[in-house]
Image (cartoon, rainbow, N blue to C red; front, top):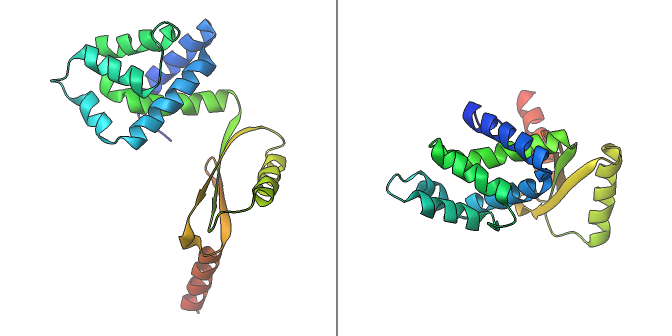
Length: 182
């Protein structure tokens, strides 16, 4: 996903800095947590962008949102100070998302999401997981699963920007389009 020029530049700089310090994976974990915090708390972006909130409060908030430790995560702390100094703190969410993309691409990690109509037994999930793993030739992947009853039946697998839609709702949609075109 493209977040824009500024977030991408900061994310690339952070990735290089973190690699130089040997902390790229730790920063990756922090960025995943930070991005999840922004998803769970939509008002977080409004608070970070508010010019009337003190810079120290924004820093503490972003440290808490990423579950960072000030003593252990000096790379992340230095990065937050840079954002504050350059008045780019409102880009924290987009920089986190861009960093995740950069890290995954550099480390050949695929983002895999399995969506099913109902909760599947573990054996079926494992079978689909193994199928995707074979498709990716054993490459690393972050596997997540969700349930969407609107699929009616079947499943959808998203691998980065590819999609395999084997759902009943998709089959019905394709059938309806075929009938309408005749």
